[in-house]
Image 1 (tube, helix red, strand yellow):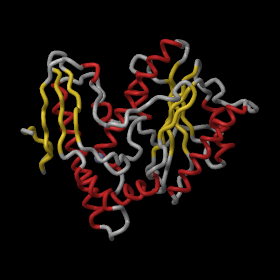
Image 2 (tube, protein in one colour):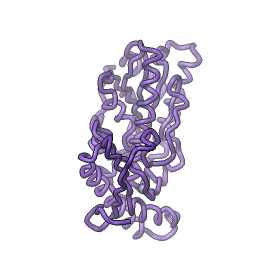
Image 3 (cartoon, protein in one colour):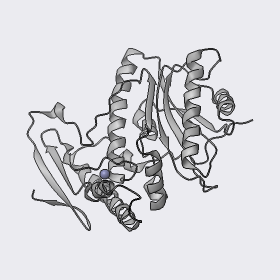
Image 4 (spheres, rainbow, N blue to C red):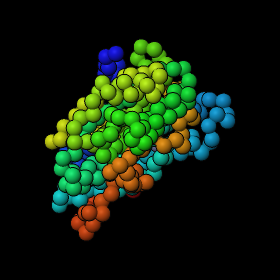
Length: 312
Ligand SMILES: [Zn+2]
């Protein structure tokens, strides 16, 4: 049985890449505003869709929060070092329903784990990051498929910890992974999968992992293992910290279904030396390291055409 890469590994996520690019200066702000405008517009479209649903399908607070999410954004420009930070915003925190909160959640988690990776790298220079993707067979029932994937990844880690099997993750010193759901391109059925950053001294063997994964899942040997560029690890890390759902690729009905099915579930988990990383709850930027520097606040309000710089 020859392992093959997942049908659509989705190697790109321009929103997050741009947002977390090298520049956080004032020159990058117009692009950032434009991305947030687009995300807010999609959130409004989703809210309108929800508003047309029969009453009782979602709690009224869910809709109210989504409607007002990101009505205003305050950016703080620390002009002596040219850094722009999202200082304040009223955000709904419903990342499965709201593209704006999904962008922010991904960016915050990416930063927290990249920071930890820097520390680990200094302590254990022999470790290298690898991107591992695990999938299960597509199916019509999202909850059933998600539970299947979740149970399979638990069993994979249990095998490593029991030490009775020669697990393909035996040499992995730490990992962080996140779940993503979408519909399979060919089948149109639900296709949950997970992307993981695994830290090890040598690359886990893809064929061994595929065999082990098939033995656990009974329905999928589709795994993918590849090294992450050590010079620019953010590019590989982004795969793990991108959206849990892709709003632009799915109907609003699927967005609502995924939200109702997966809300409250932990979609980001870690193990080993990646355990214990705290992703700050606030979706705004942390700028404590810039405390004391002079700044200018830029107040943006959302208008029908997008965010507009205005007076508070
Ligand atoms: Zn939101």
